[in-house]
Image (cartoon, rainbow, N blue to C red; front, top):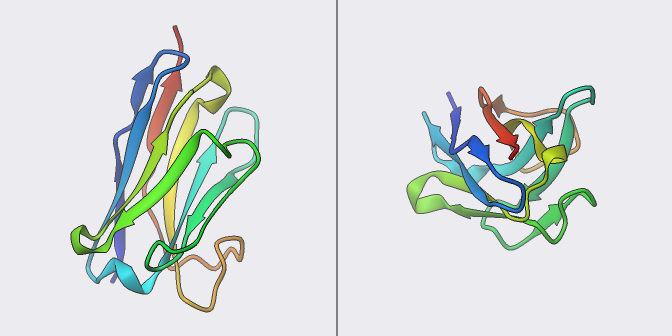
Length: 123
């Protein structure tokens, strides 16, 4: 059974960068698309990026486009979210989720969620 674990969150100053990791166990990650989501204070959970099974295709929400980059290393069973130019509005809990080939990252039919990693952007 696929299990996902996020890591890499923490406290960063405005304008700083963080790289989040999403590591899979239980099965190989390359069967799944990987979506990144975040829950920011006072807002609903937001889908912010999606990467195809082999990393050929990526999409981003308008709120992070140009600042965040998602990638993956299937040999390491890990997906990444590189976050640059962070601002306080990026504060929240970040989750990764896996989606089967027939399901989009917006489908709500995730095969698995991680437990989340907290990101705080503050001076």
